[in-house]
Amino acid sequence: MDFTPVKKSPNTWIIQPNMPDYNKTYESFSWEAIRAEFEGLPDGKGLNIAHEAVDRHANGPLCDRTAIRWLGKEGNVLDLSFKELKAGSNQFANLLCRSGVRKGERVFVMAGRIPELYIAAIGALKNISVFCPLFSAFGPEPVYQRLERGDARVLITRKKLYKQKIAGLRKRLPKLEYIFLTDTKEDEDDGVCSLSRHLAEMSTDFHIPPTDPEDMALLHFTSGTTGMPKGAIHVHNALLTHYMTGKYVLDLHPGDIFWCTADPGWVTGTSYGIFAPLVHGVTNIVDEADFDAERWYRILEKQKVNVWYTAPSAIRRLMRLDIKPLKQYNLKNLRIIHSVGEPLNPDAVVWGEKTLGLPIHDNWWQTETGGIMISNYMSMEIRPGSMGRPLPGIEAAIIHRAGNETVEVMEEPDIQGELALRPGWPSMFRGYLHEEERYKKSFVDGWYITGDLASCDKDGYFWFIGRADDIIKTSGHMVGPFEVESALTEHPAVAEAGVIGKPNPLIGELVKAFVSLKPGIIPDDKLRLELIGFARKKLGSAVAPKEIEFMKDLPKNNSGKIMRRLLKARESGPPEKAVRE
Ligand code: ATP
Ligand code: MG
Image (cartoon, rainbow, N blue to C red; front, side, top):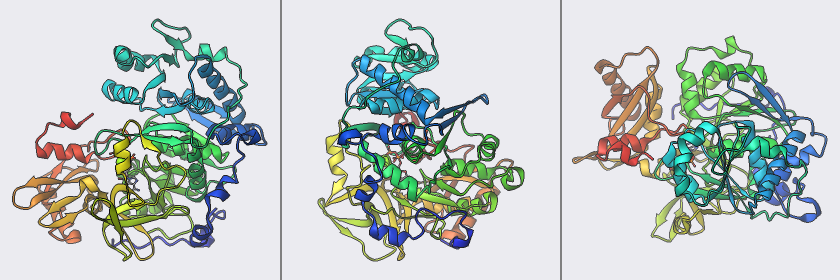
């Protein structure tokens, strides 16, 4: 990559980062020491996420601190203190108990980012039931698949969503016994109840039962970028990773205001949109509304956000617009910006520094890993285009398969291969629900194989190449789409690019790019040729796209990830519908 590293001098630190020296922390790290920072349930009765994230603070000096500041779509604001969150989640846990919902049973929430979602998440964990959030934008069929595969017993939703997406499915979901609506005052027919009415009848006291740290806590479906989503199982112990990454990656400090823009339907919106900030006792901003650049900048300013966690798709949308945030808004409280979900194009890191006054730190993880695994840190130079270095407590490697059951670890730098992690960190998934074989297949020779391809440089920085499924094989070369996409987005006319291999009888696959342009730019053949030439100069003719197709917007899933498999399906034959959920 031809970007200069973003060097950061300790003189520019506003406050000392939690990890001033990466190597030192990496070497001395132990999970036992992290566990020792937790309180545990009284009388040694185990570890429960809800106790550590909420009750512990509610019972101590942080009791009146705002745990969640909820910003409603219409401009209304609701603050929930740790004490209030404790009381509300106790009521919810009591409601589950009274309904006979037991340990391990699944409580789904599909209601958008509303306060009840957070109360239900914490309340379900108190009852040692399993919290499973869904995007409210899912259509009836994806909702059905997840509820059915997840053995849903309880669903919290809204009236309109119920009527549109659930009512017609009830017969196909015999296990789904309880439906609570967040926006009705009275119970309706057919076992559909008012959440507020029933919660009001419940006591605000609840005694969390003994919880084994290995008890199932969360069921999270993967984003479905490469195929049918998988239901990843996480346990209460996962909170150790949420806490540790909140400390070393997000660099949360007491008194911070934190904002994660992800919806809890995507794992980022749960691990970091709920648990990491709460367990750190900082204020968590929740915005009910969808992306809106002006609104987002206003939130950063008005809420005095210190730590911001967002995604490349959102950053690229901000980059398209002619807004000068540093001139138009006061962003002086921002201390660190992080991004996850897709590769962060190097020019986005640099844009952050120029436009927001701070570089954007990329980090990498998956639904399966439950928390951030590889990251750029406050105290380290950023190498734009790199995902950074493994977290303390995490061993990452580039491996090549040597047969079905053995792998060879690449010790030499800059070799491309599969990104693998040594199992054993607390938020590692404990299974794919009802897919035991698939789960087993993810582990080879003592490594968890992530399904992504990457390389590692001599200083231990990992560089994403692409998903194993997305790699393009063209005239004997292996081309990672990210490299081509990043080269194209450096052109001033380009907003986003999605690159695929188009089947070709002569060369196997031909590199084809789908490109969306910045506002006001006219797509024409002249620009197409210019872009091909621009990419050739940067990448050479073997790797540069041979075809470019302009698109108004690239297809994305609900987590905001570019759906290359849909782009590919357009080229390879099967109708798009067949591969879309
Ligand atoms: P599915 O597994 O159902 O196809 P998904 O992999 O998109 O969906 P997630 O678990 O949300 O579901 O996403 C994890 C994947 O996202 C990673 O394996 C990687 O491919 C991509 N990813 C996440 N962060 C980064 C990053 N910083 N750089 C590059 N890729 C990233
Ligand atoms: Mg995946």
